[in-house]
Image 1 (tube, rainbow, N blue to C red):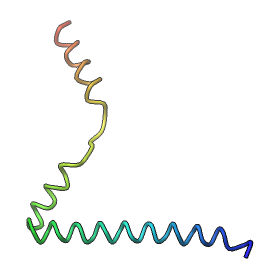
Image 2 (image 1 turned 90 degrees about the vertical axis):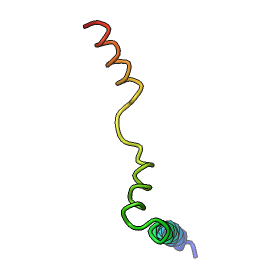
Image 3 (image 1 turned 135 degrees about the vertical axis):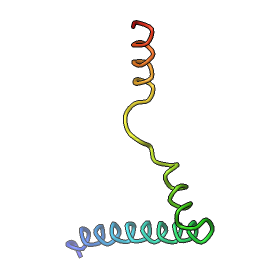
Image 4 (image 1 turned 90 degrees about the horizontal axis):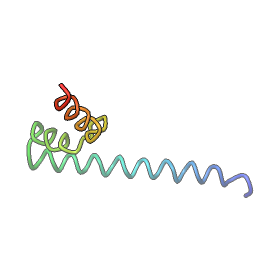
Length: 68
């Protein structure tokens, strides 16, 4: 039984991934059923965090406008 712990951890990790994947699939199917494919994609894109640091970039832009 001593050697089972890593296998149990692997199984728990797999089940966690599988359950998250199933949740995603069911949720996306619900969105598509309610909104249609194109609007479901538009809805999901609203939650994209993007990239960069908006605050820093905004301050840099404002500073360049006031100095130039």
